[in-house]
Image (tube, rainbow, N blue to C red; front, side, top):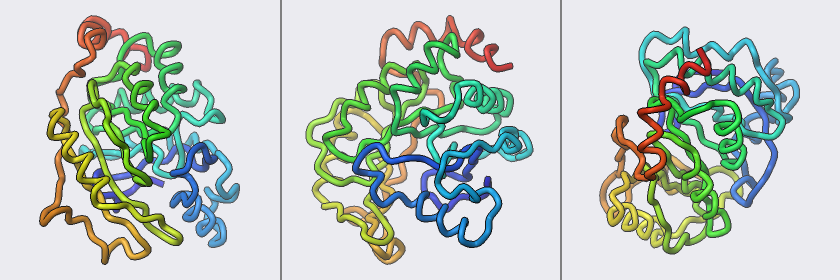
Length: 264
């Protein structure tokens, strides 16, 4: 439920929640759903509900037990901002992230509007600087999630263009500190065209956003590799980077203490 991760852009995963439901085309071949079914068939206790949203209160404090600092993907097997996860439970997870601040937390959601709601009603200020917040954009139909994410006051905001299912076209990355791009992997995976990834790489270069190319995907992820135009692209954001959004720049210094204290 929390261990070294094989995901290229993180070090470990922490899953105080498991299970999810489909909200957009990127969910069709969900790796977490496939893995949950496999674990359920193997009799894994935490997956006795299959892919139904399930809270694991005993895992909320897990990062506090890890003494070595790590980049931690929060809920690789779920979505912390799923409608079936109570705000009170999210608060407990935030309390852990605030206390165990020797880690960097990567919170990725397909539901940024609920992240905005939580931040406004429960936090009273910006997210701690060591908590990165992100959303998934798999095609043009999800581009509005970027606008929504910009409403979240955070030092680091990121976009995961994975699985990249179509060309994104022109995209405004103001206030975004990092972009991850990758194709879909596993059974029935849908192909990603090289020009889609190249266009996003060019956009990132033009707008000064670090670019991370995760994988080509396909049914044999390892064989397909992650080389784009002769090299790997493993750029990361500056952990102390402040968003370009003016209201966040002003709020971060004046509200940071109150935002942190909310969960201590």
